[in-house]
Figure 1 (tube, helix red, strand yellow):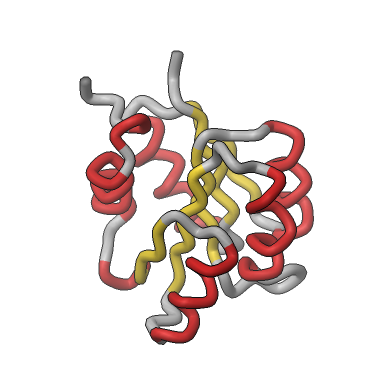
Figure 2 (figure 1 turned 180 degrees about the vertical axis):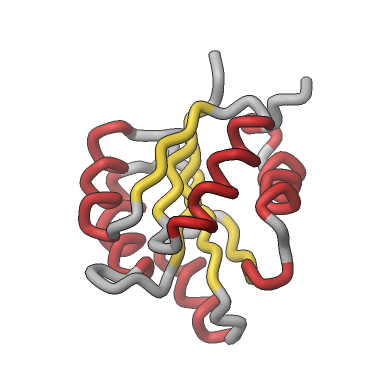
Length: 126
């Protein structure tokens, strides 16, 4: 069975690149471009992995994280943002993020690699 991944990303181009990268790595992928609807989809679909953008127009990623992390204890939530501030990283981890990545430092394929390196149960190559 393929691992499931929900990408909550408001940039449609980047969302498409994530979809291509995670699908190529063997994930079943859904993309949501709005924070509030992404939060609702996460709670109903209960994916194994969520790639969560932080800066979104309708509901920011830290609010989503605050609302879903405790309700989805089996889900790995990875925050990807251009906010490269230590306080943001600490806040995201305290709210339940499993990993925080600076998306300006990684391509979508490299993010897949980071996921597989950090979470053995999501590594589709074995």
